[in-house]
Image 1 (cartoon, rainbow, N blue to C red):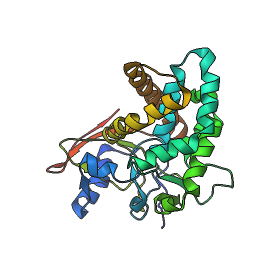
Image 2: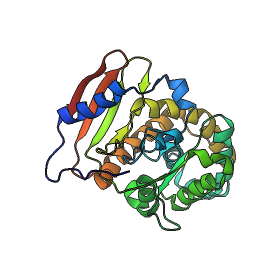
Image 3: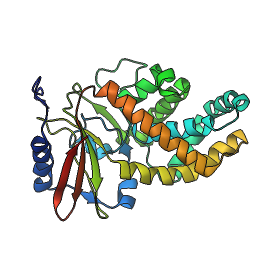
Image 4: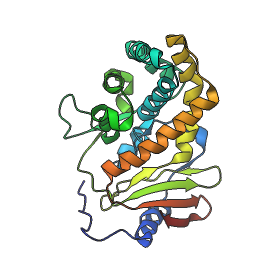
Length: 275
């Protein structure tokens, strides 16, 4: 696939964003309810996913399912007493395969992606790589867990269909935060061959969060023999996510505009607002 280099020094306009979206909608895209979307792998916001790559997952949130798992682990550990955090983290590291198994057996597909220029031992996902290489900035001392979780996912043969190898370089012109109204969620292709955008779908992220929390948090509590307050956990997780979105976009999309997009199946694009 040939990707046209974005126009240097020329900001993307709301009209161009509308054209990018409406061209796909008019051509015909999938609209899925939450349950149907959750039955598919949810992948990273990476703008290099094209139509072919969408067969391996729906661009949704930072790091896809793996990113949400890591944020939930971080929220859990952060709420523990200081003198319990190190031992709990070690226990979770030692049982990362069990965490992966619990997620898979509860019907939550686990997808990961890398890219064609990632060297052995590197993480092709920019967000996961940031978590592994900048643990202090992101407040996660989970470098080993990041690598272990990704490696286990890649080692599972049954996950081969959910493993995307993205090509090309990041040339995203901006970030589109999709805010679908009504029951249906649009499946937008981030990379059309001439344009790239990061695609973030908070509603679908939240739907996965609820499903994942119901199986992952009990597993973490059982492994560590420690418990946390559910409300505090949710608040901590939301805080971590908001912080990571800001910091990751500063690293991965510096200076790029962020657009909130309201849309529904009946009317297509309703409104586009630049933040």
